[in-house]
Image: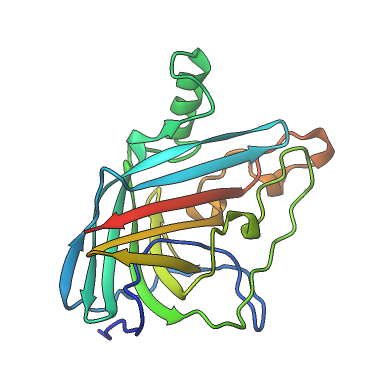
Length: 240
């Protein structure tokens, strides 16, 4: 299998997924790709400080929270990332817009864990595994997707960016037993042997089989009886 190569900064598989430009195109979601051979030194993910933030939208409101990163690693050789994999605990999902003491917290948590969404009883973990890395060119641009406008229209990709990307990361994201390859730009910093990376991106949840309230099946969107298929995801990943 081919070696994933790049020069420049150490790049973690932390994610800022948006759309690219020159020419502009939306974030790519394709079938799972082959994972390249990883050689070099292994950096361990700091599970105590790494997490995945999520935000879901419906016309009547929003819910948000985080999913813990339980384990993972990056493999580096010289100034190249040759591989990486992260494991997320779906059963450890937290909701932050509702107090845990509120009965609605338990209702929403249970619904998200159910077969309507993550089907956590059968798929308690999600994973992301790096498949390729490319340089982010100065001519690349971020392009926002159109959304059905309500009081809670999903955040734009450009609103989820905290800086200028340096590289494109591609990797296989597995949720609910479904694996899709996503490609996105990423920002990374390295200081005293610690890789720190933050990212934010939008995905279409239905690509992974999370179909409840599918926006595309709404007969009359004016009735606001649907859940946006767009989910915003932010990553805060640290590796030592």
